[in-house]
Each structure stands twice: as C-alpha cells, then as structure tokens.
Length: 294
Image (cartoon, rainbow, N blue to C red):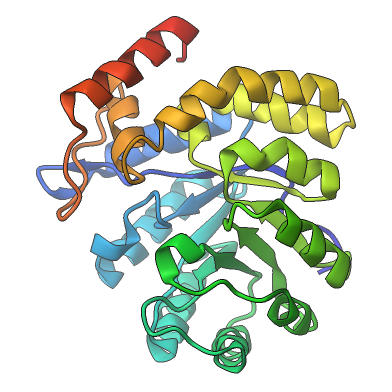
C-alpha cells in the first residue's frame, strides 16, 4: 500500500453487552459517538472488544451491523486473529464478505510460532483475502514478540498495510520504521506512547483511551500529524492519568466501567473477566469527574 490505511486515532471499540448478548443499539450509539468526534477508523472485536469470548457468528454479525450502519463514513477493521492459521484464514474471509475495510490480525498466541511460522501464518491470510491487513504484535498477551525481520519480510506482500505495535518498546518501533518501506505503516497500541511514536514517523495509535476521550485523543494525534509536537505532548500529558487508570486492571475491564460511568452502559465483561474492585472504580470515577470527560 502506498498510503496509510488511516492516520491519527483508530479506536479499539468495546463490545457492548446486555443480558449476555451483543447490544446492537448501543453498538450504533458508540459508533456514532466516535464518528461525531471525528474518528475515522475503528477496530471491532479486538482485545478491547473481548474477541476471545465472542463466537465467530457474533463477530461476523458485529462486522456486518457496523458496516451497514457506518457505510463509507469510517474505516472498519475486523479483528480476525487466531492461533490456528486455518481458523484465522476462514474468519478473515468471512469478515471480508461482511464488507470490512481491513483486518486486524493478532499474532498466534500460546503455541509460540517461530519467525518462519509467523511469516507463513500471515502469508496464508494475505493470500486468502484482498483487503488490507494490519499485523498486531502484543507480546504481553501472546507470549511471542514478532521480530522486526518478520515485519520487513511481510512488508513485501501487497495487502500488508502495517503493524499495530503494542510491545511498548520505543526502540523496536524505531527499528521497524527503519527496516520497512514507507508503504508499511506503524501504529502504536500503547496510548501513552502515541506522541513519541508519531514523532518517529508512526502513523498514529490504535487506542483504548479514545473510547472515553475521542475528541481529546483526536486533537492530540492531529497536532502530531501537523508537526505541532509541543501541543501534542501537552495533551498527552493531560491524558496520562486517564491512560494509566484504564490499565489499573486487565483491559477492557476498566474501560467498560468508564463507559458506564459516562452514561454508556456497555454491560459487564464476559467471564472470565470480572468487575473492577471498588477502590479501582472510585479512582476511575474521580479522574473522569475531575477532567470533565464526556
């Protein structure tokens, strides 16, 4: 790809539930809120969207519903990763059929593929679909840190758009950008690293915090995109307390609580994830109230 699939902020959207089922009216509310804030890229059924506890059928219904609702107003990325290559290929094909604009594909987890296995896994998915693919490296969850050399190798495939790099390693981000062609974009998956990564040449962030503060996250990224890094850094510093609080427990437990506190009841996380502790919720409530997040 010659231009980034998107720049700035892409929201890793929570999946709203009601009585244990996907709450599609609330999904529309969340999508509209993001678009009203100027967000033009959204990930569905990623880590923040509780992909491990969604069935393939639920995921495809979410992809289809979101595409029908958003149309061309927003770039929609479908989370289709799996630690089974055959499963990832099948779900990616199904997501493409729903009209998804691109895919976010986490690296195989638990079974710890070799660099050659990682390449062949993504190559198989790339061969199976025509839409852009964003690789997703989150070694704290998968147990494997995808090597920069694998990114460089994969960047030669025509529909590999880039990587969501969630290793929280600024040096690796710099080395990836140096090793890969300009057609291979890098988005940080760590909200507190947004401005530093963009200053290195990253295309933006795939964000948890923008569920809560889409307007401010967009203002931060827009400032960085325009080269106003001091302004971007000021906004980043103002948001750090929120960003930290959203990881006081495993994601997406805190962000779903925050959304409820803001008046968007997205239900509880599915088991085995459980609710925030009372003291954690109190901290989050204090931050939201003190910063007038809406």
